[in-house]
Amino acid sequence: MAKRIDVSDLNIYYGNFLAVENVTVSIEPRSITALIGPSGCGKSTFLRSLNRMHEVIPGARVEGKVVMDGQDLYAPDVDPVDVRQHIGMVFQRPNPFPTMSIYDNVAAGIRLNNKKMKRADLDTLVERSLRGANLWNEVKDRLDRPGAGLSGGQQQRLCIARAIAIEPDVLLMDEPCSALDPISTLAIEDLMTELKERFTIVIVTHNMQQAARVSEQTGFFNLSGVGQPGRLIEFNSTEKIFSNPDEKATEDYISGRFG
Ligand SMILES: Nc1ncnc2c1ncn2[C@@H]1O[C@H](COP(=O)(O)OP(=O)(O)OP(=O)(O)O)[C@@H](O)[C@H]1O
Ligand SMILES: [Mg+2]
Image (cartoon, rainbow, N blue to C red; front, side):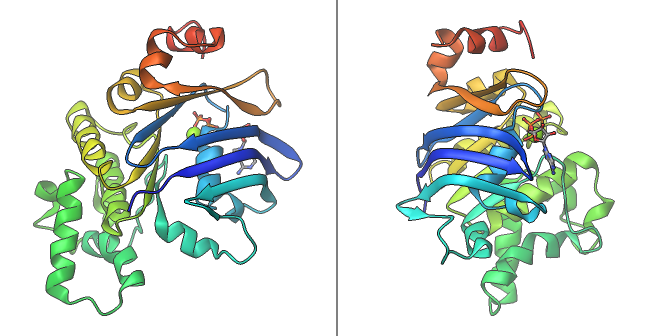
C-alpha cells in the first residue's frame, strides 16, 4: 500500500562531510516525485537516506527525521532491514546477483519474505514482475541463465523486476533509465505510471523530459560549490517547476544555463 513520507531537517553525512543539508519535504502517496539537479548535489545520497541504505557505508549517518505514515524510520526500535523490505530501491548502476539465475534474481526478495510460497505461485509472480519491467520476452527462454549474462539495459530492467516483485510501499529509483534505449525507457515510464496507483515512487533523473512526463512533484537540488553541501532549492508541482519556477536557480538549471 502506498505510503507518504515526511522528511524534516535532514542532514546527511559521510564521516565529517555534510553531503546534504537541511532537507524538509513531504512525498505524497500514489504519485511520482522526481528529483533533479547537477551531478554531485546529493540526489542519490538523499534517496538512499529514505530507506536506510545510506548507513551501510562506513561512517555514514543522518540527523533529522524521515517519517513514513507516522512511523519514524530512524527510531531506535526500527530494524533497517525491515525498512528496506517496505521501501524498495533500484540503484543508479544495475546490481543483479551475478551468479544467480534470472529467475532467482527476481524471486530473491519474495523468498526472503515468504519462504513457503508454492512454485507455481512464484512462477506467476516472477513472470508478472518481468513483464512489468518489459523484460519477459527477452528472457523467458533463459530464466535459468545467470543475471550477469544480460546486457546493461537488461540488467537494469531485471533489477526493476526484482524491486517490484516484493510489492513495496515505496519504490526509490535512481536514474533507472540511464542505460536504457528509448523503447525500454518509455516502457519503464509506462510501468511507473501504472505502479503509482499502488506505490509511492521517487525517481532521480537527469532527463528533464522524463521528469516532466512522469512526475507530479519535482524537487530541484543544487550545491553552491565544491565541498559545499547539496540543498533542496525548490520543491513544487512539476508543472510549476517546468513553466514558472519560484527560484531563478531552478529556471537556470532546467533551461540548460548550467549543470
Ligand atoms: N560513499 C561515499 N563516501 C563519501 N562521499 C560520498 C559517497 N557517495 C557520495 N559522496 C559524496 O556526496 C556528494 C553527493 O553525491 P551523490 O552521489 O549523492 O550525488 P548525485 O546528485 O547523485 O550525483 P550524480 O548525478 O552524479 O549521480 C558528492 O560530493 C559525493 O562525492
Ligand atoms: Mg547519483
